[in-house]
Length: 92
Image (tube, rainbow, N blue to C red; front, top):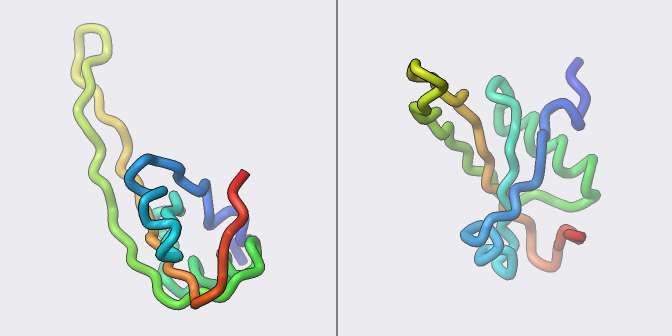
C-alpha cells in the first residue's frame, strides 16, 4: 500500500493558488496514478483536516530546448482540495 507521503508530493505555493486560501482551497502536486479517494485520505492524514471536495487535473509537459535537441518536461498531476468550513492548513 502506498503511504500518504508518497501520494502528496508538495503543497504548491503560487500567486494564483494563494488567492483561494481564504476560501479554503489548497493546491497540491500529487502522484499521477493517485485517485481522488487516495488524495482525500492522504490530505486528511497528513494535515489533520476534513476534506469537502477534490478537483484534479493533469498539466501537460512543455517542450524545452536542451543543447541542440528538443526535450520535454514531464506531465504533472495537481489537485485542488477544498476543506470544510472552519478547517485550515497552517502554511509556514
